[in-house]
Image (cartoon, rainbow, N blue to C red):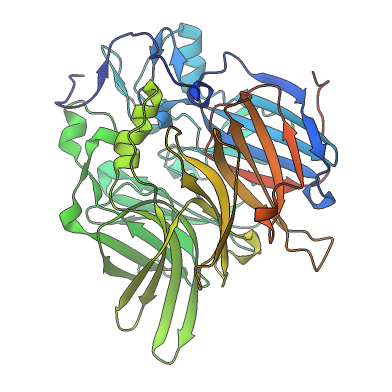
Length: 489
């Protein structure tokens, strides 16, 4: 396959020298065995369970390095939490791609944003599936999720890979997004984008893990879509103008570089009826870009139904197109972080109201029991710091008033996604916030727990690993006694 003009085509090269945050994008040479962390304080009983996390980790192979953060082979982690004891295990997802390439000792096909010289082009989306973005606990499986292909089944107790998840025979290899939405009753909604065919796939999965419905809907100028939201009666997609151009792909560009930023098109909100997917409505929004949505809910008013939605909005797609490449070579592009933005869509009148809360925010999450319902608080990463990739603090922001409290970690600490964990044992407890940071000073990864209503007071407990993990993306917490399936080191 010939390289398209402007597409990064790489010959074998040495890894670029990196600054002190080099471990953030380093490659663990092997799986990480079960290891005991050093714990300060005690994790609340409500956190007895397992925090799973996923992210790109296999960036280097055979003397070659991926040039985009999202290319790396996925490594899934589990933090087993039991009061004053925490153990960690990390294991690469044994996708067909990783197995073939580690056996060969070299990259055999392209990644999401990297095309290597004189290699085979991807035969199918799953042939470049890195299973490196998120996880979904479902039934007896832990699903490792990517963006453009199948989910991968893992054993939740050992992280052993069990193969591709096929929901239905005609859906084999179909894209299954990394951001499913799970409602309070256990219903799972998800989507997938088939860029080349201009199709948006929708999935409805029952609480028992069985597929209830799936279908493909044509969408004009279908862009790259990373996340969506659900309300009581609707599915909501924000369509930024990063649009697929098949001619670039045919000319040899990577999948990422086959997309073109077209700000003149503005952004659209696509609202789909949950019960009748043919009932759709589009709204025009100011140009912007996003990775993540916090939550959406709908309100019936005398003037009609209003959908409320909050998301982390950027002015453009530089974070994806530039920043996530620069960090792979130890450089920072310095693009401003996204800001927490509140959107109101009036379904009857078509009116759109958008408010920037003026707070830097990424990795937004809520109390998962409120998915699709009214919420007031969003937990998120915040506060970029010069000389560091990503963020240095976590925050809780009230999306109706804009009031926000935060905790800033020590200088040099890089914040990853934090999740909310409810406290079912106490009706008066506000719940807990749980997540990881990479501490540059000690070259260690630290798991922290905060009281959800007192972030500024700092962690009530922390567990420090004896090593640093590469920065990851998303995770999920599962309550219940964590099973230690091997002898820890």
